[in-house]
Image 1 (tube, rainbow, N blue to C red):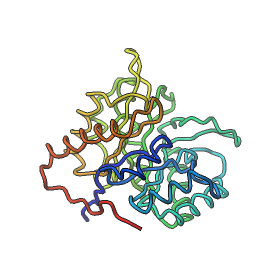
Image 2: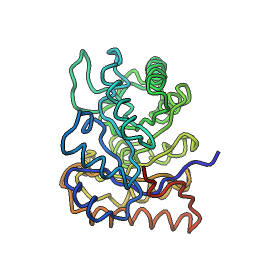
Image 3: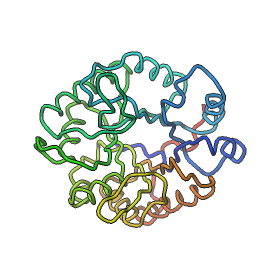
Length: 285
């Protein structure tokens, strides 16, 4: 089956709500942080519905905590499903991590040990979530700054086994691969080349802060040249793939982000020429 490529999107941020509605920029879709809209109403929800009339929406969560040993939060999942029914996103994603324990949220995306026990645990929870939502989900690789002594495999082997066991998909964050590769001393191409192209449905691109000896995934800078280079190699490996830029701090004007998105378009054009099947561009309703 040919992979659906929805083109080039941006993370929808509060700073740009009005500009998006008034100017209808050349963006194929927007991705929203799910938890920001899991409310009954209010101005942000109203903006979202206006934007949804003109653009497809992806929902991207930060609180699923799929790797936690706490029971799955059915109240959260119910609100997630309710929002999905309301917004009708093209897909729902979250992160391959845990965010806390004992019902305490760390408000951070914490990496997991790469072990067989963790693989089975996470895959089982993904299956439960997908059954609850009635749809497959995407899981994103997170950036990391430490490793576990009891890890038994590489990160790319870990995520590959999980998505195969759970029959879900991958949101491959190219910047996170670069950040983790720098922090842990592995070749990012080893990661890219080990992932099954059939499982990758979306790319994230973002900026980071480089401190020389280590790199932090801050989403407050322009995308660095090595990440652009890795993105091009990922396109060669995975084919034309829905791509978006995340910016969460030091947010520039919307036009600056669109100019950066045009760089991604240009790289894709260089790799594929005009032979890109955009199966849904600016779908409405």
